[in-house]
Image (cartoon, rainbow, N blue to C red):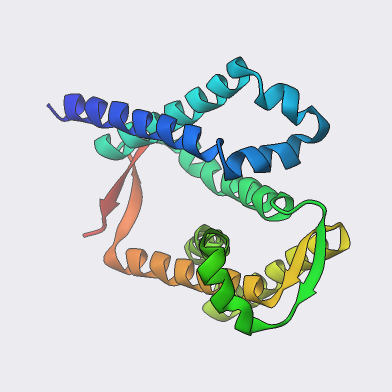
Length: 212
């Protein structure tokens, strides 16, 4: 019965992922891919076969993840690869979301306008480093060193954005990134204190259990 329910859940998750992909790549995702691909963006993004492939990949990923969560059986290789994949994707999103833009903003009072007119941008900057905070906590790095590392990482990214015209060196981005990192660090800390851990089930499979 659990396997059947897991399959149903995975199919529903795949459908949601497919619909999300259509919506995402019809708006902000389209702009991101346009910036990422450059001069070849029109021919690729205007190609139905290419976009259907993108939507199908998103749907399959959503379905696969949902099935593993429902069964509480995770491929060990995916668990180990997840941090590296996240770091690459996060760095790409941060560095390529505003290509061709350059500027500096040290006025933190602008946070009100951003929340009003660009809430997606604010919450993107807030949550993009939450997983990185979790990674630092799982590596047993102290909170002080972790926060210092987060500040340095964010400052380097913001500086690179300014130097290579990939965005604005923005104090609001810096603060929101660091807050998100700290939230992720303490979220992972709470889960570890609760006793959650991955347990090896077989050579290629692990499950998430609570330590007794």
